[in-house]
Length: 323
Ligand code: KDG
Image (cartoon, rainbow, N blue to C red; front, side, top):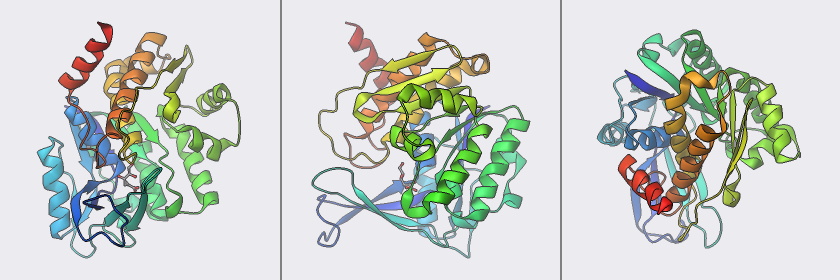
């Protein structure tokens, strides 16, 4: 049994050791990045069985992606190696204020050579849910078609599907991003945009109007990230706001959205059967509340996923709230 399958590009992440400006820092630490593998790690720490699918170079960095994910309890047995292309690398540049800047070195990477005919039914075997993001379709025409194919296949096989648009403006043009992301929304059950992404996709509206507009496109549940304002969720039956958790030491915002997705899915997976009929208020609030907690924790550690909690840590924090 596999709770979640996810597909995406994982990269080797270099971040300056002292969080200084990239051009002057002599020392870098090496880790793993990739929105989907961040979600895979987050869910695995919360006790879910996750299978990560991706294409990696036949290089030492590809080995490192696999050993790191396997070390986090993620199933990597279906990952594909491509000896003719590299594993991508990625640098994070910490700024004195605001979000870190990111620099990608991923053109021509093994992951960007994914085509629809490579999609393998075996990837979904034994699984209940598929999670994808808008980053894979941003890598090229073929990766976009492959993402669509996998979402369709998952639906045909009765899996539920979640989709985080993860808009990365550096990767594609505004027009293509908007058109492609909008076209994938009807293929998911759970859609999780940020408020800025919602505005990018649909133009300026009241928050509640976004919920209705996205639900009208097909998803059964829409969870919107509102940054420092927490989050809001919409289903046919409910509209619920969840308050944010305090961030005591803001260190690195990259990966917070993936942490949110892990927290959200970890609860929603327990209610898969109810999704189609419209999840009620209580379960929706529990999912958003846990998602907010994970999002806030991710920002308080350097690295995309290193600060993500285990299930017992989450329980201890949430139980502590009640006393
Ligand atoms: O959400 C975090 C990701 O942005 C980061 O891990 C790198 O996957 C990545 C990307 O393509 O930006």
